[in-house]
Length: 116
Image 1 (cartoon, rainbow, N blue to C red):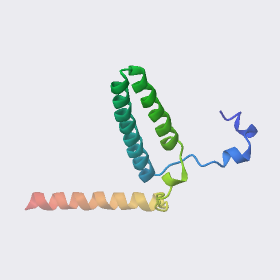
Image 2: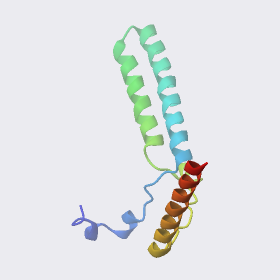
Image 3: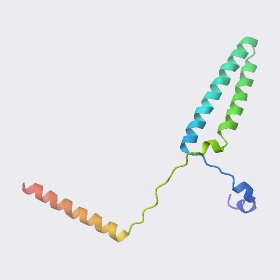
Image 4: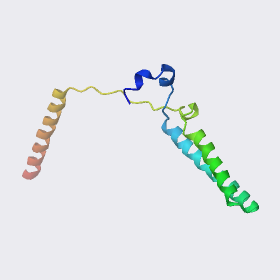
């Protein structure tokens, strides 16, 4: 895939392809609502006309519409981005000293408990 990226225009590379967690939740809810509504309508139309194919066509139309509305990361699904915490910078030397000091304290507490 990396060999194709130099040939892709910048206008296509700049298209956002992410969706935040709240947007994912809303997209899933919209998908389920659309499918259920089209399934009910399709069942009713198929029952009235006595053609199972009408039910399937209407349900298929619902799948296509819900896919277009929920699979594409529209801007309405990117309104609440996560605010990440800044990365912590720690010294490996100070981290190892803190661990060693903690182990020494634990061993002293164990010895004290054994004496009591």
